[in-house]
Image (tube, rainbow, N blue to C red; front, side, top):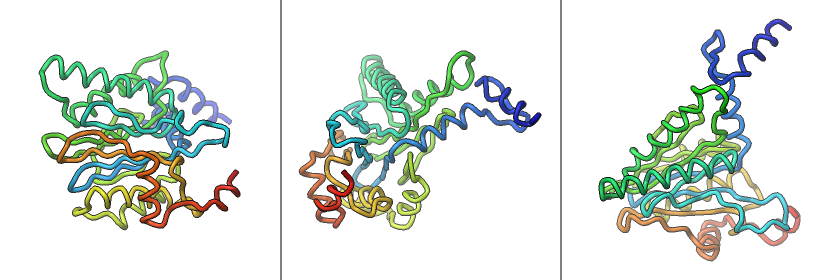
Length: 252
């Protein structure tokens, strides 16, 4: 009982370390990320792919109202997992920082620079009393001077750079699929296929076009492009990942 009481005392405040050096509120925020639907990022030789599982909880929900991938700047996309409201706040912050950089320096912001601006902002909320950490993880992907970059942010405020990464629910299974199938010479089309396959790896019934978001940033154009449902369906059909009508009826 005494040990439980001590833990409760340490997890009441974000600014209090436990005796073993842990910040419980940050760890709880990571658990919130695990409860969010998955997002996948893949860095290829031709650009960056972001994909997100956005299956709705009800057939009455309008699919377009579920936003998991956002444009931060012309050359940067952001995918999220965790609390959607927290994600929106961080994405708005990222957009402001991108515009400030363009106005101040007359050039687009670097992917690493933006990621560290965002993680510095996140970290402040692990150090100040009276606030809570952001319960969301982000994938920030884009192209900088022709070079694709892909970063993950953590609720602790730590940035990580990846070749391919998954966040959100079933991260372990998705990450295992990425590690087994990733190659350095992937094309952009291959990257889309790999991201969709990773999402489908935890859904035996396949996925529908309105249940997933996909966006790319090509090294050639350096432009964020979100795929339409028709384009996504073409990729699902080509990779034999499309859910059949029978499966969709059973899910409903």
